[in-house]
Length: 90
Length: 170
Image (cartoon, rainbow over all chains, first blue to last red):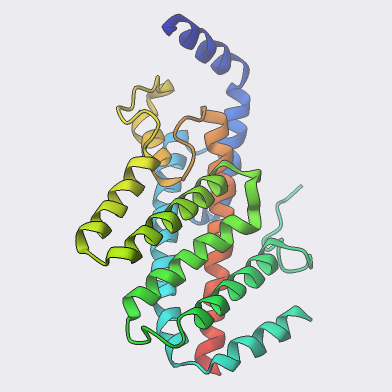
């Protein structure tokens, strides 16, 4: 079973090396900081690290925004939400 | 060839608009369900809003992606465990439900026996922890799922920011 796995990873790394580089560069395009820097190839591990940091910061954003939304929803008029929704549906 | 800065603003069926609809729908249900009880439990409301955000993300994407399937599965399991919790209202039950959730999400190999290529082992393992549903995926699939997950997360954050602005100015 280990030989099968090593064989598959070997063939996978041989065939899809370009594919992985392609995907890494695609990820790089999505990251906000690296995109503004020079568009040369940044190392894959740096891209992965920035990706992890970016995902964590997005999670934190969602947490803080849902906190504020919870506060706002508590004080908001319940008809306002339906008004907004009907406006957006059109 | 150049990727557009904001691809979602012109297309009427865009991800952002679908996310907005779904999220507002979930928020409305939240309001309707709890309007008579628990109005002072803001922590509970915060948890529900957060859950609604991830749920709307996963529902809009559907079962096309591994991460959305993982989130939907987690939500379904969470609903079952909270239904059991509501019967007893004991603090031990809550802990039990949380441990169930953790155990089921780690149902694949918890020992991290991956053959990590190119010395990317630290980063790849961290990434697998952050993106739901990619524990047993190969490197290509992992990167693909991560890109889609980031795109949806960023759009969801944008939607929520717009809503906060909207609600705070009305």
